[in-house]
Image (cartoon, rainbow, N blue to C red):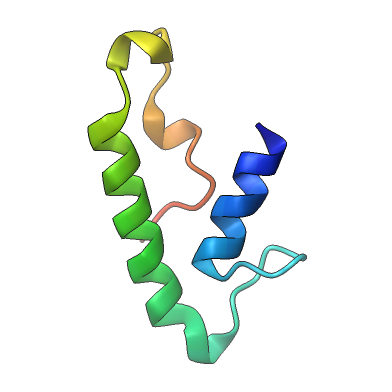
Length: 62
């Protein structure tokens, strides 16, 4: 799971310290939203066992 989280962060543009470069922020935000929507549409709610998906996605859009 940790590897998957790191892959998501890397795809979004999150740096090692958890930051996104200022000039890449808008793209990172859009990428995060796209990935989260794709994941939400593919996940089976029963697999989450009552956990709010927002609580496990690594980056929350404002």
